Image 1 (cartoon, rainbow, N blue to C red):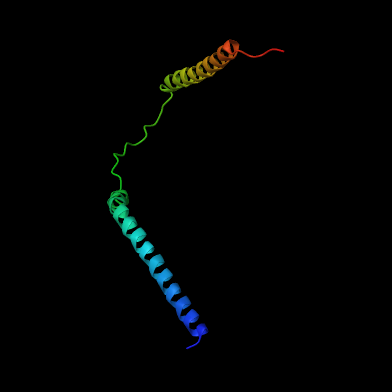
Image 2: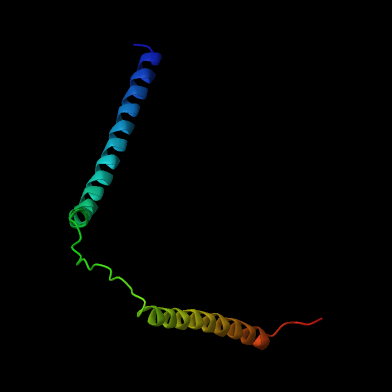
Length: 103
């Protein structure tokens, strides 16, 4: 046998050894993945079931309810404006207390 045959057989053996090591690492990774997938599978089964909710039909508003609806709407709009103004005031107050180097 010549040296070329020995080197070729050695390269083939090293390649097979490397492939076995890669396969073993893949096996270990899949084993860990399978262990992690079991709790997720139970969660997926729960998510697949339909969510039971109680249905309540919308009630029609009448002319008598219009004043109540408008008052509620105005209160919500005012609360939103107050929240925006409070946020602006907090930001301004925070900026006033910042120590800024005024060169």
